[in-house]
View 1 (cartoon, rainbow, N blue to C red):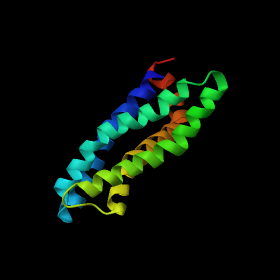
View 2 (cartoon, rainbow, N blue to C red):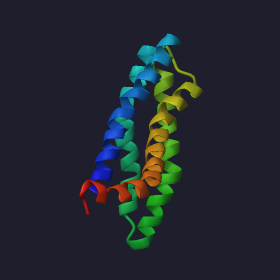
View 3 (cartoon, helix red, strand yellow):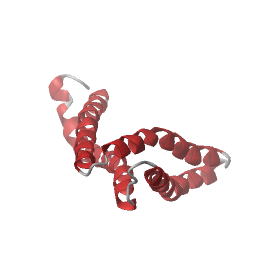
View 4 (cartoon, rainbow, N blue to C red):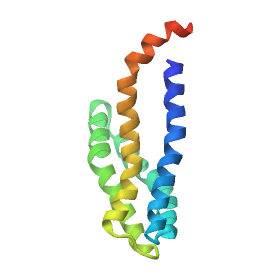
Length: 137
């Protein structure tokens, strides 16, 4: 199991810089490189606030109600807040970003997470079958 986790971590360590470099070049070509950097740096506190918006209210409910609240917050509230916060920051930076540009900046990390999760699900049987060949398990 640790081999699969290591493979996914390595994939993420390669994928994230490649995606960020592609995105940076795209915004620099539009003359909005400084605005992109500002909104990308603002993604860190936005992520912390988004996680807090999901985690704290879900902990207020016991048992299965807490789990239901967690999933509703994670799948409904968190994406709306995430995109909305990026849109608000995108309007404040100079030069201002359009809603579409701000939404693309917000969507890239979400798409990368979903892509890695889907890739992990697809690769899991392959990696489990390779474990005996490398002497693990």
